[in-house]
Length: 232
Image (cartoon, rainbow, N blue to C red; front, top):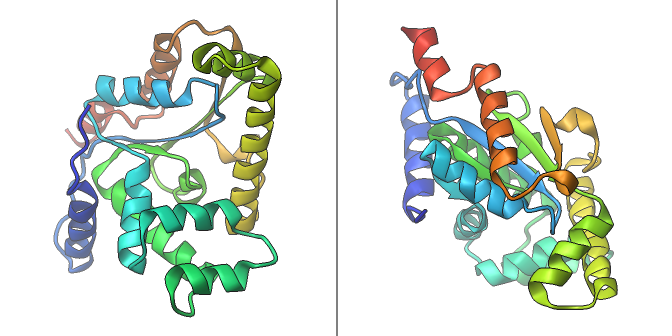
């Protein structure tokens, strides 16, 4: 599915119009937030889900929008994400943003972007969106798997030794957990952060997981069909 590069901009326009008292649409595309471990097939499941729902998928677009607001390069912002929470925080924020920007400033940009995306709906990947939108009508999904199973997939796909793939999975889990803790003071694997948790170790392909997510979306009354029925 191709990504509409103007989708984020439209989200902010809609949010601004809503703030001026204009009527907000009662029925919108559903929002599904997916947090995933590498090697869990989370990216593939998200892509398939977006196609089935007929919505956009937002991953790097979130970084693009945050970077645009903060007037920094996306690549530098990725570096910031990677090292957020280290003792060099103050120096790093000042260096990357070329001005006195705090973690709170960055978080405010991120929160604004994610809330804007919720205005138009879609599949949102990572960036703590499941925390930012926890009190909104969204479905928060965690896709994970055992370290060994995730490492085996990476090893098979990238043709690298299993031990190396296992290190990649462990390091990624640690890094993503650190980002969530540093930004939101939450634990990545706390089940209370999610509405649905899928362990893909025994799920073949991607479609069984997509079917489960769509069923959960419908059961929660968040699918477009259920929204239409509610307002009709």
